[in-house]
Length: 469
Ligand code: PFF
Figure 1 (tube, helix red, strand yellow):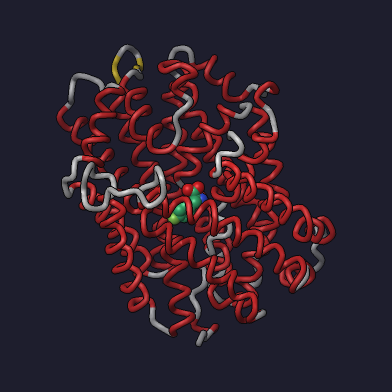
Figure 2 (spheres, protein in one colour):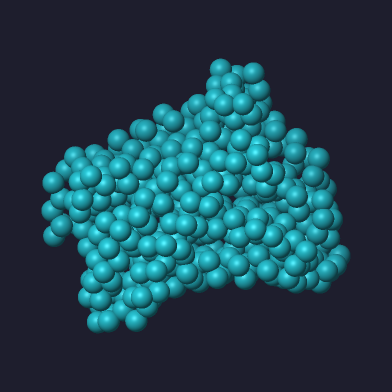
């Protein structure tokens, strides 16, 4: 089906690095990394995270990109074209984005709502800063109130994603990344600077960066591993797809290190933005929330307390923060949609517009129940599994079941079916000789699958409430 000569291509190495980094930098960096770092040992967590990223993360990302580049196919067909029996990996690699796409726009919609909220406050020059109680009420009324507003906001986010994907790899994804990524970095630095200017920031900073060995345990390693896979967008088919657009003359290992550097940098900056002011204004207790609770409830209250030269800067900080969260989420969402679109194109021989329209319809249809599942007492509010509404269920299935399974099988496939030399040869096209070939082979055959099996086991034990994490 696939005509590789007509395949989209990045315009250069930086375009690829930027696109992959844009996918990697997402909500995981913002609402999860700082929380995990605070909980599992500060500096020691950072160290473990980086060590895992440059070993196991490097290995899996290299494998995925090499498979994409060599086959010039997206996940669904890439694995099939190499070994038909292993096409299950392609299906798993498709299931993750298909599940994520079904709810990611809902969260994007919440960001749109808070962005509009801060913009309105600034325009009206609202005198009273936002408190935690107000942000809590705003968030729960918005998501649980049963109005169509969350749906409308999610539709705005989904629409932006669809437009960029429909415009194509160069006109849509590359061009938007060129604006979004530098802006995102500038915004991160600006908000981090505001946070670090607050009284008591030094103690918060020490709490974040000082290694606390009393909090170090096997849990530090398990959470750092899980976070790393999610944050680097691994086992979601994204890197296979983006790798399939990569030019042969670009070095895969060099690109992988750059992507990892960028992703870790934003996660680190997110810690600087969030941990010191939360620690100052809400204490250690405040650092116990993550995800939506941190982003939409605690943080607006914390911003509300921020001042500079005696004047409140809460609304400016809030606007900048939600703008950066919007860019981070949008570029990740684009990568996930592109993966599904690309797989449909390869499998069905469709053009970008036709495949893009099918996925857009799917995205809009699935966002209705996912968005309305928070409406208290609404038709979609039932629990799919105990304590899990539809959105939580999709998130759980994608990230705790399909993703580790896909990651594990990818390693077994690369290490034992095609063998590490297959990947090494693809790297060697540009590199001549891949100097890290031996450690890479060890990683892909033993260390990476063992590490993935470990986190998978812990996810299951945690869900069965056998271990406390
Ligand atoms: N790397 C992303 C993050 O850290 O948020 C993971 C991701 C999630 C990528 C959802 C794409 C996506 F649509």
